[in-house]
Length: 112
Length: 113
Image (cartoon, rainbow over all chains, first blue to last red; front, side, top):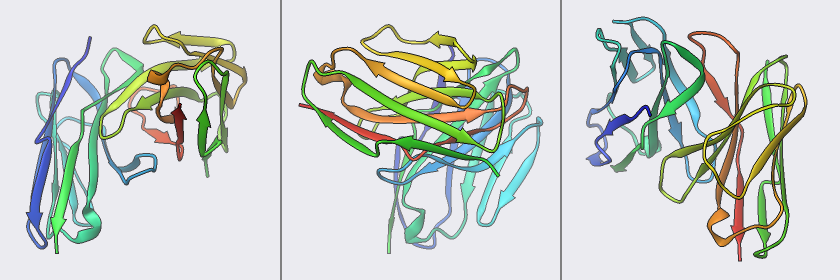
């Protein structure tokens, strides 16, 4: 089945630093999504990408849909303490849009 | 706008007892509906999804079952809970469309003792 490889697994950074995480898939994706999950809550959608090469920003967050359609990255600039949480990538395969596949998550820790 | 509800928010149940978790969506029609389980500090495991009333696809053989009695209602059940059923259960919805997004409910924390 489809495997999404998300890295890094965890990050410990200083407030104000930039962060980058990425995801790769074994097949072509139609959609790439990035979520943030706070403890005890459901994941919240941060950015959705629908076209190869698309670069989308949401405040300090920027994500890109890879040209090969098999990868995506998320950047967070000038991190702040409230950025702490688990970030998940997800996507739909080109030929099966009933299911979403998820990465294993990147746990972000920000030191004030 | 669309809203997704889950209840209960938390649940503590003894081993061998039955389970019923409910999820409802407002503000959309004919959504795809999903149940995920998340172990502590882990990723999301897809359990079931449904593309319509009475249509259930099971992803992982296990002690759980799902039903969709109404268009915007999705229920996760078990006849006899196991310790391993403990976890954080998330319901989600999306439109049946290419290139769409998925939205999650607030989750139910289940502890089986």
